Structure formats: structure tokens, C-alpha cells
Length: 208
Image (cartoon, rainbow, N blue to C red; front, side):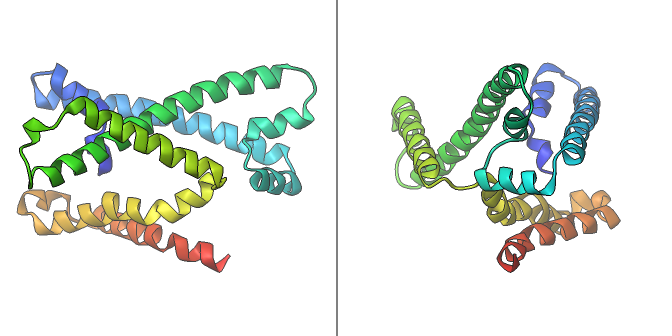
């Protein structure tokens, strides 16, 4: 459900006048990209799963390093070092700017929504607001890196928010709004189940 707000869908809606055609193009692009992504990720994951030992995997988790960084420690030559460096640069840039833009727009929307109840939003300097949000994000990331917080732990602790936003709220809307009646059924209940599991995942971390 959360993919409805995907920038690709919004771009197709702006480019195509026909909404049905825009939806078909977006779905086709999503199918191709998801199949390619899943195939590459599964090949990558299974390759490293069958090539490293349990001790090496535990060591990589404790050191908070990537699979390529682990491979560079045992495979001789400079190819892995060069490849991992290039991939890390592109991965960090694409992931950072993607998350940064989404987080920036979310924070900006929340601030404007709160300030609109007090003052006229047209009086707010957009450039100053953008710089303030950018500074806040940089400071937050600096604190995060300084405390060496594991990304895996962050995902596990942040999963309830994702479960509520992407699973529980859409399920509630489907059974609350009559226009969404055609979406009701087994699939909607499966989404609810996934949302509950995501909300319970931090408890599993505590059990560990």
C-alpha cells in the first residue's frame, strides 16, 4: 500500500494524461524492477551464505561491516577492494539521498502543518526552513555515527512504525472507507498479519 506514494507513480501520473495508462506503465515498470532486484539480491545473498562460515558471519555482524568488506579480508588482490569501494560510493549516495529527500519532505510537511495553525505559512522563508532541516538531519546523523548504532538494530526497532504506517493504517482504511470495499478480503487480512508481526519484532529482539 505504501508504494502508492512511490515517486515513480507520481512521475507517470504527471507525464500521462490518461490515469489508466499511467497506472499500467507504473505497474509494468515496478514488476520489471522488482523481479530484477529480487533476482540480484537472492543471487548475492545465497552466494555469500554458501561461501562464508558461521564464525565469519558473526564476526561481520559484530564489526558492522558489509559482505564485500568481509570478502576483501580473505580474497587476495585489489579487485574486491576497488569493486567494493565503487559499489559503496554508489550505494551510500543513492541510499542517502533517497532517504534524505524523503525524510526532509516529511519533516518539512510536519513543520508546515504545525506552523500553519499559528501563522500564515506564506510568511515562512523556505530557504531558511530548508537549511534548518538540513542542519538538523546532519546533526542527527553525526550523533548516530558517534554512538556506532547498528543499522540492523535500527531497522528492528523502527519496524513497528513501518508496520503501523504501511500495514495497520491501510487495513483500517479499507474496512472504514466504502470506496475501498473492493480491496477487502484475504489479502487485506494478510497485510494486517504482516503489520502485527512488524510491530512485535522489537519484542523478539528483547528475547534474543
